[in-house]
Length: 305
Image (tube, rainbow, N blue to C red):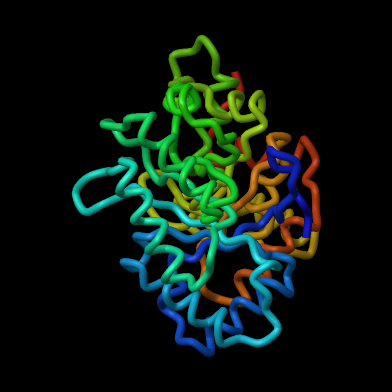
């Protein structure tokens, strides 16, 4: 598995196993899924306290405890918090309570990475800083980051947070790639020229902040998966051609398109199927050419000025 250099001098797999749907699996099936991920080189698991109302973390923790041959130190466990029913909450008390709950459900003493799940309009950076300090000092969290944040929101946190913010989870896929489009359609009156994210792609590269791409196979506004979707005939023709050329699945080609970007993103899977995870993991085996990357980009409906 291709390794990505992360901020702070560590490396991690290019493929992150998203755990949002793992609550669907029973204990034995989940144990097999975890072993399949590890056999594929994907030892980085992404959770959130809201996934399945905590059930996903709980089932995962139980599976880890019961499975033989899996050592905690061989895993990277990441979780997110800050979303509550009807509102966001990045207060110190909520962050501390959330992490305690996450650790209890995962049956572990520490998280490798904690992310704030969504920007909180009522955020008080001093409270986030105090929570992060306590979590770090007590050994409950080793690294920190954010999710779905714009650059200025990150800068606001960095005024008081001492720990480096190493990761930002952002939606990115072939059809949902305004992060790339707005950097090319500069000074144009086109849909792709709209800067909806504060140039977060360039910001992340400048600040050595790893982007973790979520929903990598989704169409805009959660309109479903674009693979095989008749609304994207040209894109699927290109994916089919490259899949045949490289001897991998179309999902792996779409994943390889994300991994080809020099920002060195990680890709978060969302599957609970072992075979699908193995397919996607093969994306790290190839590197698309520049021409192939742009051909896929254009076939997804984007333009070049």
